[in-house]
Image (cartoon, rainbow, N blue to C red):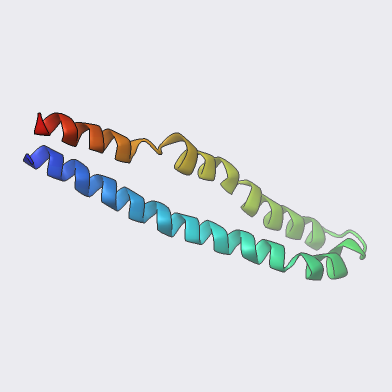
Length: 94
């Protein structure tokens, strides 16, 4: 294994670890969001509208909805890194 192949393998492994921790963070964010929906319905949906409730809804929903493009880019667009490193390592062995 050459030095370049070892570097690629290290990058692929750290990329995998990074994705695992990101998945945990996204899971905690969405779990908290779903967990607090009944409280939100009880306190904010049944009450009147005010500037505070508008800012609450903007803060609550934009924080969750703005992570959707990040998740798509992070998990759907870049899954090929391990396959690329495997191909490079196989070519290096030949």
